[in-house]
Image (tube, rainbow, N blue to C red):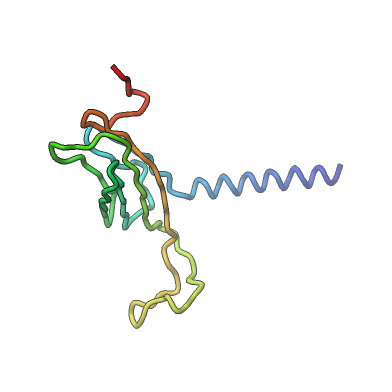
Amino acid sequence: MFRSLIAATLCVAIHTSGAALASDTPQPVQQHNSNAVWFENWTGLRNASMVISYPDGTLETIEARSGTPVFKLVGAQVLDGVYRYELRAATDKTEKIKNPINNGRGDAARSELAVPFLLNGHFTVSRGVIVTPKDLKEE
């Protein structure tokens, strides 16, 4: 009985700490309209860069020092297909630099760095506009 009580307590403790950790991590949510993709719930992130891979393999990088990066479809010849992205940003949390050789020099020297955030995703363009995949219908 004592062992099962300890096991149950450990399970609750692990689950609780995991939930706390998950709630501390930024959880941006991809949003879009017919010609743009951005992220909501951006709290706690800065210095973002979003690399977009077009269906033909072309890469575009969008940077935003504060706030969410926004990708916009531009031009008359928009490619239909799946666009993939990699979103990188710095969080408000910091961690101690484990390798002091990378701490900067002089006034730029630091003992901590921002914890990075990474998110991969995709969106679909059909007939020149960004669509939700479940809305795609062949006619």
